[in-house]
Image (cartoon, rainbow, N blue to C red):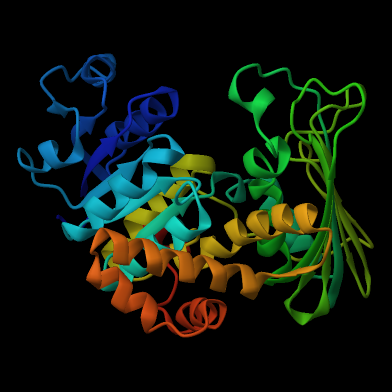
Amino acid sequence: MSARTLRVVVVGAGNMGRRWISIAEESAAFELVGVVDIFTGGARAAVEAIGRPDLPVAATLAEMLERVETDAVANVTIPAAHFGVTVTALARGLHVVSEKPAAATLAESVALTAASEAHDRLFVVSQSRRHNSQLHELKSQASGLGRLGIATTEFFRAPHFGGFRDEMAHPLLLDMAIHPFDSARFLLDADPVAVYCEEYNPSWSWYAGDAAATAIFEMTGGARYIYTGSWASPGAETSWNGSWRVSGENGSAMWNGDEPPRSEPETQAASEGLRYGGVAESLHSFAAAVHVGGTCSGEVHENILSLAMVEAAVISARRGQRIRIDDVLEEARAEAIRAAAERGDEQIRAVLDGWGDAGEHLRAWRATSPAGADLDVARV
């Protein structure tokens, strides 16, 4: 690995995978050394589309790693395949950046967090909507309002996707809510403590599962985050980013999700801005973190708390009661230990056994981890 270039294999050559492939190919921060897809014809089409027909392709990551040398793996497969690809890469001593979610379940995500520790490699989840310049400006404006106590998101859309989303049990919470939940943590500089959530389905909904939900999160420091959303609400639709309000002791900041945010009273705080934004920001901050030996936004110990918010909201809606986030994380750790024992993965099992309380471990790890690399993106 040179001072500026990270060799990378991209796994997954679907629509999102091709986007990642293009970013890696066009950036001086990366050297694309191979593309993997279970359908090798798709991988060949992807490398031909960027003008590199001789680039190695393979059906599995294991096969590719026998043919090329790489520093990192970009996992852009479907969620069900995330665990297998990421755990294989980490075990081979490779850093990993992955499309969200970290894995198909919270327990698998906890196991991958332990794997990143066991193999001392960086594992980052691309939470690309956090890298929105207007969201950063909203955070900047809110920081000038004194102590923050309330953040709210309203999300009302009426997409007719067809396919699997129409049949999901929890389409809104499982497929969409991770974005605002993660953004709320970023805005408030706080972690989730507990949640009460209700799911429901409008009588006219075309979804089999509940397409609407309202969740109230208690956050560290006592702030509250309230999310109300629906995927079956035509007319006067909000931005895909939702409509936001952040309330502080000296005023409020608002963002409609598409236009520059505003605050009352106006604040003078300035955002440092983003060099790339979106997925490209995720990938370049990952490369910078590998180079400087630090961490960055989306590092799995940090990111998993956003995924836990989703899991806890679903459990709360099902049980009709307030759910503590740490209890959900501890249940996931126990499940991950059982699964590791069944697989015979003693390294992951041993790491998880040594965690103690999962929530406390994740927060302590983040507090003592190397300085973040977000400000070093310009280096790559």
